[in-house]
Length: 162
Image (cartoon, rainbow, N blue to C red; front, side):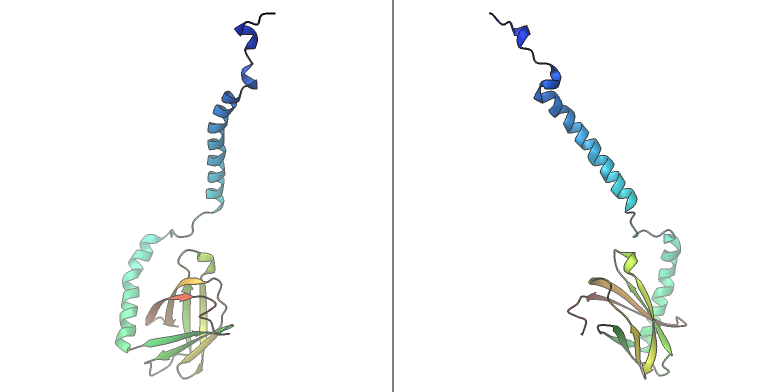
């Protein structure tokens, strides 16, 4: 029996190449939907809604830092396993409390604001546990915010005394 070329034609859905060519764009569509879903469920927290007001506030923050420099203020921070201790140098009339703001550069959920109480002349302390290792922006000011001292520290379990 002779077979003709028409008898050897396989239907398209039983061939490899049509399915391969369909799967390429289909995989891109699935990846795009997954990327869109991840982007919608994990919104970034880096951009502020009131960026203009924060930009204007930079000048007042610089004035507060200059005020701390004029007063000759300096601080020494020490982190314990459960406490944060600050030694404030250069202040003649020590305030009763200090406000410390710890800001993580990328994850705002880890930001903390602490009020440290005066436990000795120039020594302030509050309960504290480090939420995440890494770089931290630290702002120290008195309760009435007449001055501010800013620092950038790398904090990890090795720098915290047990």
